[in-house]
Amino acid sequence: MFLHRQVFRRLNSTFVPRHVFPDYRIALTDFKGHQMRAIQRFQQLLPQLNLLLELRDSRAPISTRNVIFDDLMVNRRGGNTKRLVLYTKSDLCPKETIEKLRVWHSELGDEFMTLDSRSARDVRNLIKILEWKYDQTIEQTLGHVEGNEGLPLGYRILVAGMPNVGKSTLVNTLRFVGAAKTHNLSESVHGSVSHKRRKVAKTGGQAGVTRATSECIRIADHRGGIYLYDTPGVSLPGRVTTREKMLSLSQCGCVKNNLVDPIIQADYLLYIMNLQNPAAYDQYTKGLPTNNVYKVLAGVGKATGIKDDNGAAIHWIDKWRQGARQTKQKISFDVETLLDDESFSYKDLVARELEQLGPWLSSVPQDGQKSAGQRLSKQALKAKNSNQLFNL
Ligand SMILES: Nc1nc2c(ncn2[C@@H]2O[C@H](COP(=O)(O)OP(=O)(O)OP(=O)(O)O)[C@@H](O)[C@H]2O)c(=O)[nH]1
Image (cartoon, rainbow, N blue to C red; front, side):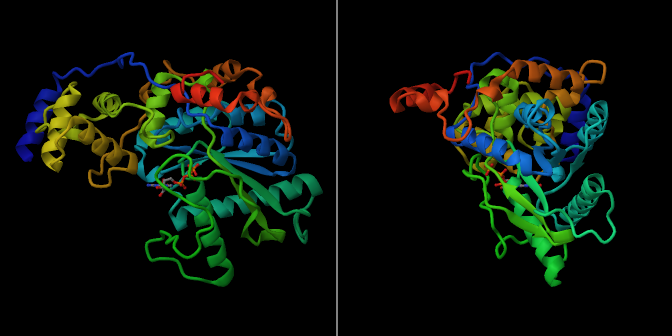
């Protein structure tokens, strides 16, 4: 192993990674009917909400950011609702990405926090922030905090984000930590939470586990209570997706995992690893970096006994999707995190995407009305969805 690493270091100086990913044709959206219903519900709930907790996967902070929430908040419908961005899966995220997030969010004057949604310690800190934000809201609306019982409906939060970013996991941990505080229950020694007993929201490694917005869930007793709604993940409409975004989303498990060919997905993983840290796969290539995905898959096949390339690709991708706990390496799935501040402006990206989205949200029907998609006959809708390539 020691020798392998030495060889790797020597060759690494001459290895040239690809700087452009091939122009493969892949599906450009995974938007579904229940997500449209979720957006309708957001619009109904917004006027009575105090905070939007927008979750993004910290391994893909650009791809898992959904411009629909910007449009909801920034442009017109947010009212007095504030927003706090939470980057989940911080346990799997490279430190350099967190530095980037600091720079990007300071460009916009936006608030954000990184956390592991399963960690009681991180979630306890989040609850403190939510209580403090509640106090601030009371001060702004009622003028004073001391002796005030709180807002009539308590402090109301909507938890939203792309599919599979960890919304239900966070809701469960918030519930557990809140209940532990109220009833003086002890948490596990390591500060992680066993969801077996207090799970209120279904979780899973696949996109689209939550299909409907939950009822209001009480998570803390502060000043009459802090309440939240868990919501289904909302994907990006085709007009604001790109090929790289879909590959990155697929790598995080935010779109159905049969949407992208496993070999193409594995090639993207190799491409992004080569730009950051080819040592992340050196166990499969005897420490030699390569741009040839089949060489890596042959190594995966040898190590696991999986005979075909497709199976080896699925195994390798999935290991990284779940977090590659065995390897201790951390990889960002978004190329933007690798660019310097001269080459990439977060603020410009947000403005550009809002422009690309245009009046899309205005065309989302209010409750009771049918959307263009719903008005199509069932057969036509099935045909439209089967190629997954339409621009909504
Ligand atoms: N390592 C790690 N895994 C996490 C974290 N948060 C969630 N997960 C895992 O990510 C997967 C998806 O979590 P969910 O809570 O079901 O995600 P969701 O956003 O509710 O998904 P949808 O219902 O599809 O919208 C699960 O396997 C979780 O265990 C985290 O902070 N760190």
